[in-house]
Amino acid sequence: MMADRRRINGPPGGTRPAVFASNLQSGTSATDRAQRQRQPSELRKIFLKTGLIPTASGSSYLEFEPSASLAAARANPKSLIPPSSALKLACTVHGPKPLPRSAAFSPNLVLTTHVKYAPFAARQRKGHIRDSSERDLGVHLETALRGAIIAERWPKSGLDITITILEAEDDRWWGSAPDSHDASWGMMNVLAGCITAASAAIADAHIDCLDLVAGGVAAIVSDEPSGTSTGVPKLMLDTDPAEHRSILSACVVAYMPARDEITELWLKGDSSKASLEDGDTRTGHEALIDGAVDAARGAHTVLAEAVRESLLRTVGQA
Amino acid sequence: MATSIPPVAIPGQRLGSISTYSAGPGTHVQQSNIYASIAGPVVVDPAQPKTQTKSTLRVSRILPGTSPAAPSPASAAPTNQKPRYNTLPAVDSIVLARVTRVQKRQATVSILVVLDETSYSTTDPSKLASDNDNVASILTTAANPENHSSTDELRFQALIRKEDVRAVEKDRVVMDEMFRVGDIVRGSVLSLGDQSFYYLTTARNDLGVVMARSEAGNMMFPVSWKEMRDPVTGAGEQRKVARPY
Image: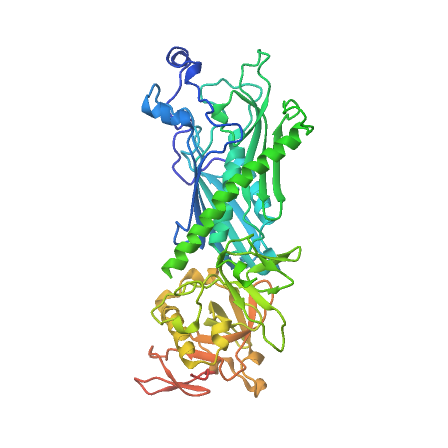
């Protein structure tokens, strides 16, 4: 990684108190583990509000409801470390503005997306320079939005979308030891949140788009210890990685309900082992995609309500 | 059928069928249905008897003063702040621009505001006056030399070529006698131009310099189509002046 020589960087490493193995064994047990309290198809509540940043042409703020275990841990603290984290992010849209002098002629809107974690957003401190995962999120977000924006209505202009992640999702429960099913599962929830928030900010900036595009996540998880026979992997919507023992595969979609179109699809992991209901002939990854679309439909209702609310607020003010 | 049109729309909301309405700005057509593509109040423009047979559905970018149901121009009081949302310059739109550079063959301007075509084309003089009131604050801040900062990078740049300055005696145009740096010019967009510049024309009576400062730094008033005068020193300066209303 490139060293950042222009800023005073914080100390590398964690942003939360250190966890010692001895402490972990005596102080916390498996019962302190965050547990999913929701139904498999129940989504977390979403807070979404647009137009909070007056200097931007469009903006939005999104927050996911924290896990029920977080509230329990706050009421009865056993450890300094919060058991799970919930997504919080802010999105700004600047433009349409003229392209830089060096850019070539473009008959369409040129979309640029930047996703940046705040240094304190994740358990591992992030640098000021965007790292590869942040660039990766930016590319995924751009693909998701490009299919929704009517770019030919804005010739010769550029649109900058900047997302600051204030609190990111964990990739696994903080107390778990790393295992073979580890991947950046939290990043997939972050992407879904980014898509929904960016869509609200674009609507707030009055940029023409085909539909409000919403992000949704579904995952195939196995919650039982791997030795037991009851631990059959199940499909769950809107998974919080901290609430599950191991996630086998996950899927993010960016979905436009009015047209029934998917603009972005990201699958990760092995989806072949999912146990579906009897008579369900779908393959694991079909079920996964359908689940993610269902989650996106749920997020879309919040998104549509937030956009309508901000519209009625401005109409009422004017 | 008209009762089923919602007062406000959000992107992706179905507004009506293409068989009863035609699609206007802020909407798009998908499988012979009209959908909103921006959030805003829905406006139904009645059919013109000669040219169109269907009324036009559009989603307005301009939020009305009172309620979405009554967007009548009479209710637009001068004190009313109408938020204007980023309209791009298009061919034939009227823009106000500040001169940033005058060369032998062309003048470079940066576009400050794209005037609303619907309000500009109306012949009601009181409506025009209120529109001028709305942009007055933009003009006064833009004409102030203290505000000539690097914000030009964020504005659309345009060129007025020598042959587009006026309609007559095009070959006798001397650019120094038409525009000075800092003038506010009303122009019409000729074309989207190349990668970096739009092309403007001022070759009409109502187009040209609308606000200018003299060499002494005072705001000047127009005395003819090619001269403006300083009220303090009385000195005249040459400009391509727009016809005052």
